[in-house]
Image (tube, rainbow, N blue to C red; front, side, top):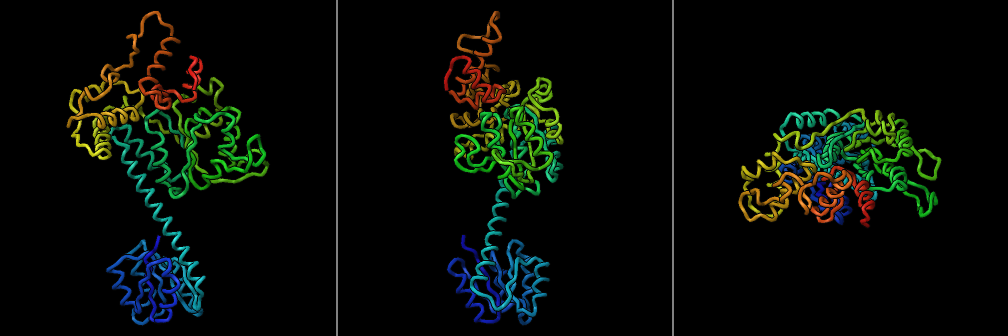
Length: 447
């Protein structure tokens, strides 16, 4: 990215020298007085201003003040003679990015400008990410009491480093809440990494979390950093935390307590500063009583609990959610659909929503893509919504069927309804993908 640079010095030779150095990579404008520089700043925008401190009438300090008051996103680099370095230090306290002491070489100029370039790029990326998250945060649509409480909680906990446990059914927006917490915190410009604990085989999870040394196990042909190391300074989201093997939970507990760990195959501790956010759709207290989850780890993770309501528990938000998703997919497809009629809305209000907001969004997306009407009606949605339940091809579940047979029929029908998409079927069923894989294996269905 080429930057717009404004050079300000009443010495023509200095301006020519710096201009020739920078113009290969950036667009350079020259001013020979503070008055001329201020006029240019009022007319145009610049990424960097490089200004001499000592000039007649309007000094470099005046230019710095003008920039900070009127162009806060512009970085200022001061130029000063050796005897007036104290003024440059004062300028730094006023917000200057850096300073150069005359005489300086082309390499010194390029080094300082490149550092400013990197800083500007980072600031732009941070602003982009924050805008993106704010836009996603707006998609947490809802004015119900429960949603308002969650939004207040996000604002309250974002600035802390405490661990957060987000509980709720699949499809309720737990990851969206985790991202909102991260990007509203002072870690917002640092990494946000996610590990889906349900999607990894037990044998790979330790390496994914903590990394490994070359030769630590068969197939470890090179050293690898884990998620904790990569997320240093930022946030690590442990999605479906209940799926972490019991044998690995002790090592995770140590990281939370001592903020250090060792890579697999190493005894050298690595210190990290990572905020942990965990999510689960299971009752962890029941998992503790069943011996599947450590109680001490639970209390270490559950410092700040956030319970996300199921969609059926916040039906007051249904009209807002429906209109939000209709608008979203109309913008994507270029269609003009005004909304949903009363008959379809009544169906939505009566449906159980096992897949929650994610299922609702899928229904709306499909309807917007397929419908030829200006208003969505009951006929634009699948039969499972119209009937309010999932049926199998043979009809209703019959008295005399075993629970095992009913479960099998429900799983296979849901998988069929989702065109074989196992991840989506698992979300609708309220189970994790690993459980679904095990069930299908039990039924003799291969990958």
